[in-house]
Length: 319
Image (cartoon, rainbow, N blue to C red):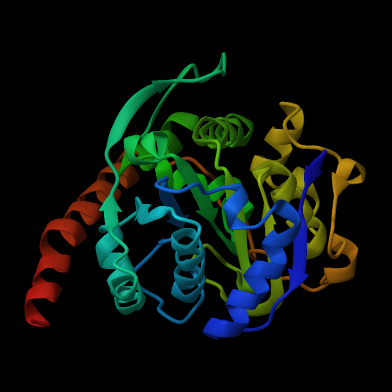
């Protein structure tokens, strides 16, 4: 039986957040149940964008800091990585205030590099994934609760799409066309291949409306954690009062038999219904998941411009 730990949490202040995380992880055995001495631990936050700072588009640096601290105390060696849509992990982290906290813990920020991996899926028998995640001893997935204009809601499974390197994400959008079932299954198979040891979802303040970046902050006062990313995502939809059929990643995990029914999930702290919000804002309108060739080319050039021109110039100007 999958266990999903859900608690109320209303602060990113260091000590209060640390206490919340300890309470959250206690039924799962604490961080020590996942991290052994000397283990290399990838922390995978949502580092979507260097723009819209303060709009809660990304996983809060305070949460990453607190998790990294717990990993170090368990004897692990954490490092942070992601593959943003535009720019570098380091550039997005810097723009969002990560660097002082990461430097305090001597936490490396790595850029992802792709490699082709065989998977258990007949449909997607090979996927190009980042070797940094596949080679890590432990992967801790740190998504943000957000509405999403293409996928309705983005949570733990979608956050692992950041383990698809660079502009391969845009090419996958183009390859899937308008087939949201196929795209949802690709995201699920990516999550299954990465197989995160632990997912902790940042729902203290979420991002509602026209996400993943065009919406607005919304206090949810929730933290969730599980070793089963599919069960956790399904539980969070119950909190948001969103039909799983509207979320391609959750619908795909159900079709593939990877997502348990809520009645089969153990909730040691709070039940999803005890945290439910009835007025969470979804996108005004959903847009197709497919990227045509012109959009892919434009997106690729934008990524290269930010990574190789804009970020270096901005870094140089601040020295």
